[in-house]
Length: 130
Length: 108
Image 1: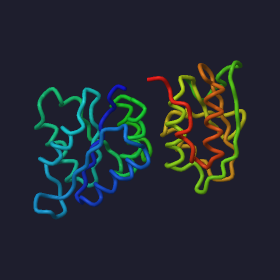
Image 2: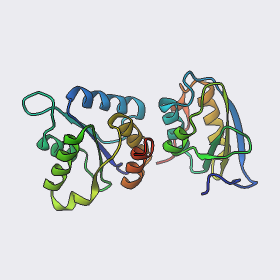
Image 3: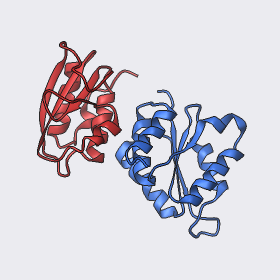
Image 4: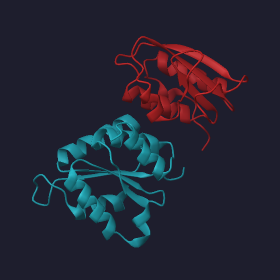
């Protein structure tokens, strides 16, 4: 079976990130590469660029990666993480403009069908258009 | 495929009563789309026999219907495995979305 687009969940809270990943696994299944990260390096609320980079690496394939974030800082650090990855990965990792839980579930559902990165991002963003 | 128009005369159809608590919300909708995607044929879903139709393989389209509980779901399929796909989908809905894994998998 060919690879699917990977999903990365980035929250200020590791509980939120882990719980979101649990929901995705349970509702969508195991066929989507999935990684999550949350909290800062001191164990408090926040996000870590290094952790986001590692999560992206964990699920990256040529199909690409869709990143779901909660608040502004998670988006900023995720964008920074993407910029710090090798050049060949840049065009294939996108941060979705979607609520983190609903977006992750929709993106993973779309990804499980083998859809392209663009279709996965749209699935995350269409449910609650902003 | 334009999901809104009549998909043609050579198609299979089916309808089934949706008794699932909460209607066709995320969890059952995901099972429905995943099952639909196992089949090569086009599969459409609606709440009336004449449409309008949404693509049953698109989670965004299925959820946009916001189908409440106690509604009749209508399906139309055209192409390879059309009858098989609708039989499997009806079985899924009638089982209250419990038997998705019992459907015949596509050859990979």
